[in-house]
Length: 112
Length: 173
Image 1 (tube, one colour):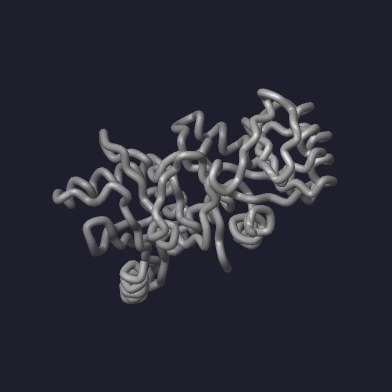
Image 2 (tube, helix red, strand yellow; image 1 turned 60 degrees about the vertical axis):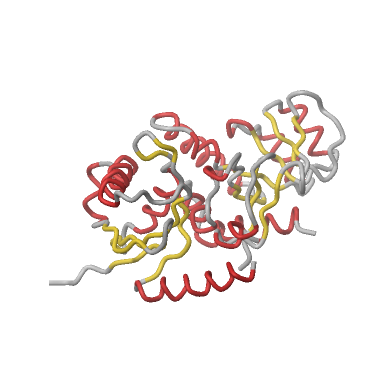
């Protein structure tokens, strides 16, 4: 059996992430499904891996669908009844690389 | 590769956000670039972006030195395209019409944008992909702009050049 390859995306939520992570995750998956359609959604094997800061999270996607996920994040502007925006900051094959990138970004943030 | 974007007048963003989104610079209409509405009146718009759907006014503006043209509704006439190419005008593809629409309207806009891009590519026009966001909510990172460009039919190289070098060549100082 061939192991499925994944890609991880570092995503920033413009409106921040609410305390109820489960509800946020559910609403986000619902919106992603609207963008992908029921026939394509299952191929993505999307999963939020980690919430990093108050407005950042890492989401996993299959290698085949990660480009569509980036597009979907550009198109999602509403979560439930609230306005939302998601910026894809970086994609990588490992979570560690994303955290390393985030560390660099943090240093730059301090400089600015 | 450095990446650039253009946003609408009044779009407020910080230098920190610009950096996080992966752009070397985000040009703002009104502050860095002038947008000239071709539907109201044809005039001399040297160095500006001509925006509108009125073909005769747009032709006049392309001839009078507009750096770039942005077509309303992605409907471009052959004559306008030829004149724009002859005068070195860049064609701007704004994604705000795609991002801000929803459902069937978004699908329709995607179809129009892909037809527009295909026609422009066939005629070897210079193309630049921009977000034209009106606020922070509608802004995109450089990765999202590249992927949206690929979604409407650009190749990986064209998308990256369109988000990067072309915008810089036209508006960078």
